[in-house]
Image (cartoon, rainbow, N blue to C red):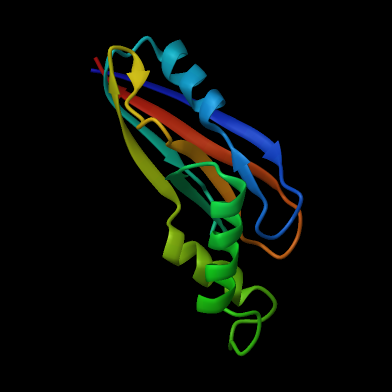
Length: 133
């Protein structure tokens, strides 16, 4: 069994910025040389999330509205960015994706996206680890 890891680094523009990282993750899988396995995409932080869905402007705007309704901006004991942490808990900080024949097995409309949930722009890292044969 082989293990391959790379870290993506990028800047976000602020709260609820959504960054499509599909091409970068696919490139890492290709570079790994792994033909059959699992690709883990993980945010090492408490205010970022990884989602897999359609990268459609209107759908992502709907996501932002739903997050604002589910977790509004005020009324928490944790200072400053409680909503950021709570939204991250709802969306999750990782996704495990199957790799077959050296490629991610994403559906036709699925993209891998990072969601910035903190209250300001950030420098972000995402760990991509591919495990398999």
